[in-house]
Length: 92
Image 1 (tube, rainbow, N blue to C red):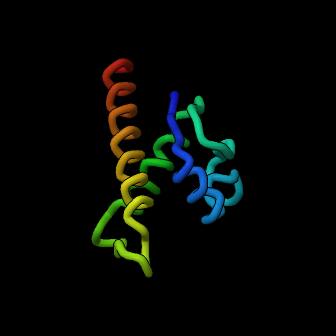
Image 2 (image 1 turned 135 degrees about the vertical axis):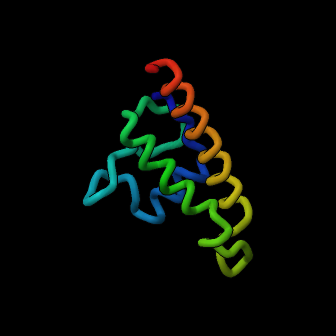
Image 3 (image 1 turned 30 degrees about the horizontal axis):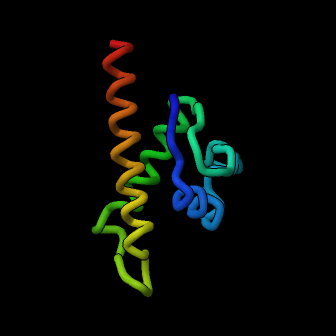
C-alpha cells in the first residue's frame, strides 16, 4: 500500500522512536515521501495516528502537542482511512 509520509510525521516517528521495527512497532523506513508498506503496518500507523489526533487523549498548545503536529496526524489518519477503505473495496 502506497503511503505518503510527511516530514512532520517522519520527525515525530524519529523523535518518539516508533516504527523502527523494535518491540511491537513494525518497521517504516525513515524519511519523508511515498513508501510501499504492508497492510499490517498501515493499520498500526492508523491506530497511532488515531490516538495522536484524538482530542480526548491530547492537549493542543505550546506546552503540549503543537497544532501543526496535530494537523499532520489528522491528515495521516484521513489518508490511511481512505487507503484502507479503498483496499477493502477492491478485495471484497
